[in-house]
Length: 81
Image 1 (cartoon, rainbow, N blue to C red):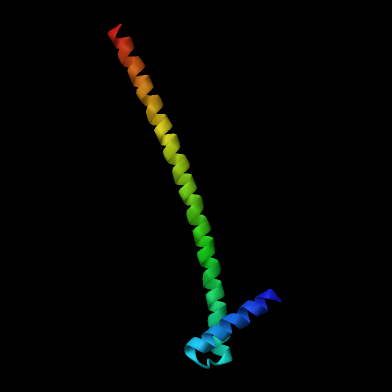
Image 2 (image 1 turned 120 degrees about the horizontal axis):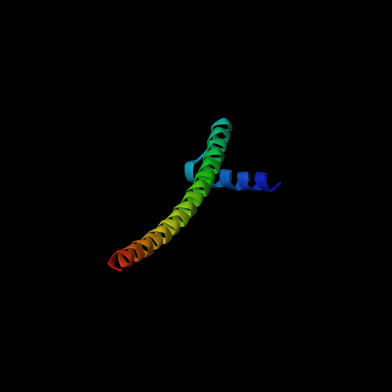
C-alpha cells in the first residue's frame, strides 16, 4: 500500500531527526498533519478560485468603464450638436 510506504518513510525520517517517539504520539501527529495538509490544499483551491473570480470581475469592470466612457463621449457629442 502506497500510503503505508509513505507513512513508514516519514516515520523513519522523524526517528532520525527526533529520536524515538511513542507510536501513539507519532500516529496522532501524523494524522493531524494529514488533516492540516488536506485543509491547506482545500484553502489553496478556494484561493485560486477567488483569484480567478477577481480577475474575471476586474476584466468585466474594465469593460464596463470603457463602455461608460464611450457612452459619455457620445452624450457629449450629442449635446454639442
